[in-house]
Image (tube, rainbow, N blue to C red; front, side):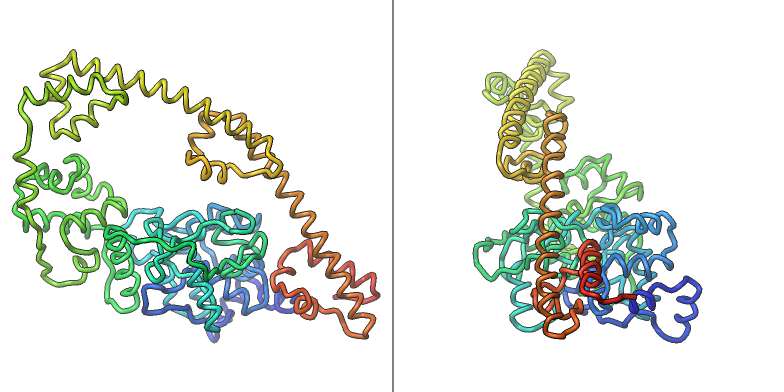
Length: 503
């Protein structure tokens, strides 16, 4: 392994000299090219490290880092793979641009941008991908069962994609064995496995089966069309595309003002103005919702020439005609004064189809009372929530097995942000307790692994067989066991005790 690392860990200038004649890294072909299930960049990096027989962190630090243009990314890599790097590697970001550029030069490939969402930076804002890996257990198992290379498609990682459309299963986002969420980049990351406990993530059981709604299928369809087309289109949309399209749609549907057009789409006119002036981009969810409203897809409006919108405006016109009169408004407001769960004035106005400003001007005293009731209700609800969170945190701190704040959040269906806000001290105690637990578990696991390795090494040595890393891995049945630095150091000590000299 050391020889391979020495070959890969060349100086920057040496790498540049190599690039003129041949690639430094293998020209590994990404999986799923030309399909909606093309491989993600992080998955590709994992497979690349495996074929070179080095850890991902060694590959990144020794070979990729010298070609990264942003110095802060290099500095982060030198101190270890960080969350900030890992969470945007497949997304629309400066970091993904840097990695794609470096890897294309090292492998001699020119299509690695297709393994990220970079091609669509003109129409999508940032944070397209989830912060952690997601996967379909059935897909992974079928790859392995059919003796196909295991990989993790880009589409699984998108925030808006919650289910696998191939098997109608919920995408998983935490290891079933250790309950941890998995970063995209990690020194021990192997596609299809957990980087923390080395458990296989595949599962052919039907326990994850679920129905996919029409709305979810429409979201999946939009992303599938875009991802599948990346290798076969001649251009990608620029940042001016969205405002241009909205203006064209407004004219086609014969709306004579932004206010009416934004009302039809279901957004504030001020927001629409910001989109149409290129001040901001709609979020990915919003853009897909707009396409749904206009009865088309993102791919169609970009690549179908003279695309005519086929929209039924009758429903919208009927909705506009349903505005209530002042007497009806008064009755609705009076009724809301006595509800058990008070609503905000804005929520009432939205549900009943009238304007807040009209209600305030016409019925100021009633509106003030509604606002007061709502504020009191929110304060009482907050107090109740604080007590509930604190109570559950105290119970969790007494449990035998420590849990993470993320697991507590999922079990009790409360966001981590809210937990930290309402119970900062207790939530910190829970987090610290879990960190100590993980540290102890890791120490015990490494100790057990080294005991097993020493036993195997002694046995091989007695039989006159050199106890190499490869032979020991075959005996343990765990290909990732030597990816940990502590294990490699321990193996060297064992070899020294047995009388072997290592370089």
